[in-house]
Amino acid sequence: MALDGGGGGPVGTSNSFTGTAETLELLGTHIYGYSGTAEVTNSAVDLLNFTTGNYYTVCTIQPYYDDLDQGDNVKFSIEVGGTQVYSIELAGATTANVHRGDPNPIPIIIPSYTSIKVTGVNSTDSDTRNVGIVLIGRIYR
Image 1: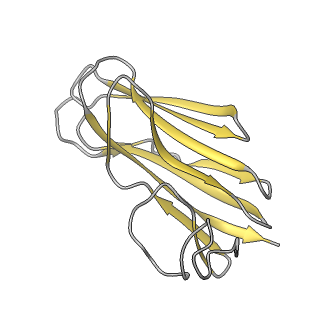
Image 2: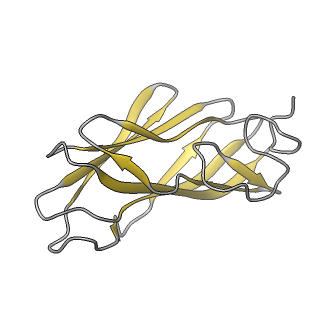
C-alpha cells in the first residue's frame, strides 16, 4: 500500500481533491489537509488525524471558527507523535456568526512516519460551535 497518496494509500487518494477529511492529501510535493467545518462542544473533537509517510513536512496549520458567541472560547491543540506541542485558545467574536481565525498560521515541521492530531474544544461552554483547520505545506524526501 502506497504512503504517498497515490492509489488509495492511508495518506490520501489518487492525488486529487477528495473533499474534507481528517487525513493528509498529497499533490506532487505539496500537501494539504482541510477538516471542513466540525461541530465542537466541551469534549475534544479530532479535526485532523494522520500519520506522515516516507518524507518530512514543512507546513502551516491555520485554525478558524465560524460562529463563536461573545464569551465563548475554542481551544485548538496539536499533538506530534502523541505529545502535545502546541495549544492556542481563540476568543469569541464580539458578534455572533463572524468567521475568525488566528491571524498567524502556526508553522510546524513534521518528521517522517509521525502521527499528527489536531483537536478542537469549546473551552468555556458546552454549546456546539463550528470550527475547522487548514494545513498546507511541502514534503521533502
